[in-house]
Image (cartoon, rainbow, N blue to C red; front, side):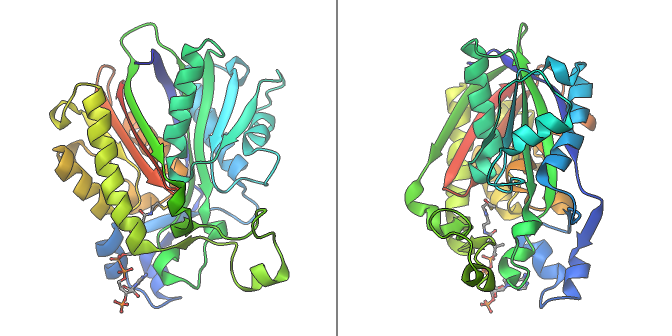
Amino acid sequence: MFKVKITGTGSYLPKKVLTNFDLEKTMDTSDEWIRTRTGIRERHIAADDEATSDIVAKAAEKAIDMAGITPKDIDLIMVATITPDNAFPATACWVQKHLGIDTEIPAFDIGAACSGYLYGLIVSAGMIEGGLVDRILLCGAETLTKITNWDDRSTCVLFGDGAGCTVVEKSDGDSAILSSYWGADGRLGDLLIQPAGGSRMPASHKTVDENLHTVSMAGNDVYKYAVSKMKESAMEALRRANLTGDDVDLYIPHQANIRIIEATIKRAGIPMEKTSVTIDHIANISAATVPISLDEAVREGRLNRGDILLLTVFGGGFTWGGAVLKW
Ligand code: ACO
């Protein structure tokens, strides 16, 4: 158990909305196919001049405001993302600049694909419990549509852009992370990958011509692992907290596909009314889906202090995890 709590949440979705009907006009797809196979109706698209740190800053301001603090009260910034502004410096450093934080606090990114926010939450809990820092700005954010292959209908309909931030700090009361569970299997990395742009395949005219800087996904294989690992993460996080699906007041899963969510809640015995489903209007925003969904739930009054909250994630790597929080 970690005696930490989330005291503020905030999210931001870029203004431009691309619906399934818009996609129908530019490629061989249909609203019906996308909705029934994935649960997605629309996604938000970052502007050309909007980078990941820009949208994080907007979400962070809301989280900081809700926590009742100022940017200068933050001890550390972490941003989980696979679409950083640059390979370096870290997006978290740009966020520090945007927020006007001149206190020279540490800032770095977390790379665990769709699992990044949950990984960051576990890392945050360990750091706070270890006495390294008192208060962390933990964010998950993506501008995935900038690395989307718009010629590949099997992937381009899935992704969106957005940012979600949280303020994580020491808890003096009942609020805590009751259990956590995380894992990875690097043998399966090739199934979900941005092939070019790193040291394995540096950027070249050839990589650009062959669209190798975009998301490549073996959809069916990823789907099977996602179902299995999301179920495992939910069950193991609950078991470690000595709880069952009946005890869950709200479940926030990573939003990759409504069918993955449905299979997981069936296994864990959690009703749909207690499950957060945001994929319809945000699509898959990788590391941002959980903190955005969390912020929406908080602002809609679906989560009250003392409630049991279950989070689970799955993503590239492969990486996965679950956590049970007493809110
Ligand atoms: N519109 C219309 N038809 C399509 C589209 C589309 N956009 N995309 C694919 N199809 C067609 C295919 O060509 C295929 O046609 P065929 O039977 O004539 O060959 C048919 O639809 C079925 O294709 P499948 O790939 O089998 O469709 P499936 O039901 O498996 O759904 C999907 C595909 C939605 C991608 C699913 O596999 C999935 O959700 N995968 C997992 C995603 C995930 O969990 N990702 C992890 C996190 S993502 C991250 O980390 C960034």
